Every structure is written in C-alpha cells, then in structure tokens.
Image (cartoon, rainbow, N blue to C red; front, top):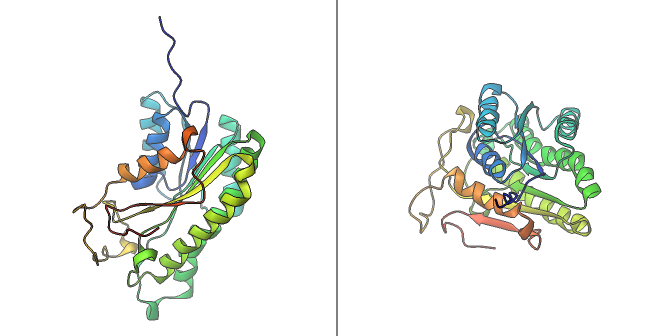
Length: 253
C-alpha cells in the first residue's frame, strides 16, 4: 500500500488573527486543509472562534483558540507563547485583524483614528516581533498582511483606514528585505470588495466608484486562496509584494 503523501504545510503552525469569521476564518480553514496546525484568534466572539476550531478538528486538523487584543503587546506575547507551547512554534503569521469604521474626516475623533491605526500597524508590529524569532530559529517563515483596495483608489469616510493600510505596505516591504536572509517571506494581500459580514461600526458599505471587470463582489475563500498560495513552500521567491485580488477593479502594481 502506497504511503500517504504529506500535505504541503504538514508540521507547520499558522497564527491567523481575526479568524472567527470572514477572510480570517476562510484562511484558517484553507491552511488547516494543507496540514497546518492553527491558532484561531478573536478579540470578542469566542463562540465563533470555537466553531472555527471545531470545524478544523472535525476535518482531522489541529487548532486552539486564543482570545487576544492585538493592540495589547503582553496579550500578543501570551498568544505566541501559547502557540509555541501547543505546537512548537509559529511558522506562518497572518495579520488579518482590522477595524473597518467609517466617519467623515471632519467628524473623526482622535480615538477613532488611533483605534484603526493601532490595530493594523501596532498590532502587526507586536505580532511579527513576537513570532519572528520562532521563524528565524527554524530558518523558514511566512508572514502575510491584509491590505485593502481603499487606499489605492481612495474612499470617502475612511482616511484612517487608508493610512493604516498604506502603512502596512511599507511594513511589509521593510520586513521582507530584513528577513529574506532567514528564508522568511513577507507579502501583503489587498482584497477588493468582498462579500463579508460587517459590524455596525463599519457603517454602510461604501459605493463602488468603478465596477470591476469581473462584475460581482469577491468571496472570502478567493482571498484565502491567495494567502494559502503565499504560505506554500513553492512560494519562496515571492516577497515584499502587494498582491491585488479585486476582480480587476484596480490594475496598479
């Protein structure tokens, strides 16, 4: 009887922030299907996070849930330590947590501004700094940040989001150059308009300025497929890039 071929991410551990629903959930399930052990993270909805972990386990995978606010450096360190304790390290980091609030610039409070930027930028900084030593030790790693089409095309009422997402691109490029010698890749996936659940704080979905050539909204699984590919061993020559997945709505580099 032929031996079963190991899955591409067998023996790897992925920490996926904001993975209780939407793109984060789809990404956690996709990486688990390739054999990765998953740390499911959320900040409030533990029930939804547990359901994702149960779904992974029912398919034969391994997952733990760790509730943590990514803007809390100590909480992030505890989450990475939990991953190391459960699975031996963090090989893949998906910085997906974000806040999608919407407010006219003249009405925006400093607290609203800081919350969006803290989650995307400080959160990614804390996460990467806590997880990267494990990757350096193994001379292998994958980091994927989640950008967005808004900062490429401009969207009213989302100046704070645009600043945060544009900052992530700089973070991605700088980290990619610095970590390349350790066989760690760092890339940014920039979704277009995706059919996701939106919290009340996000407001109404902003109107499309341009209809994408692919005349529909994208799905979370389609974003997860790009993230999944970037985490594969064969994606080792892709780093420092922003990969646009938007149905042709934005064609820039």
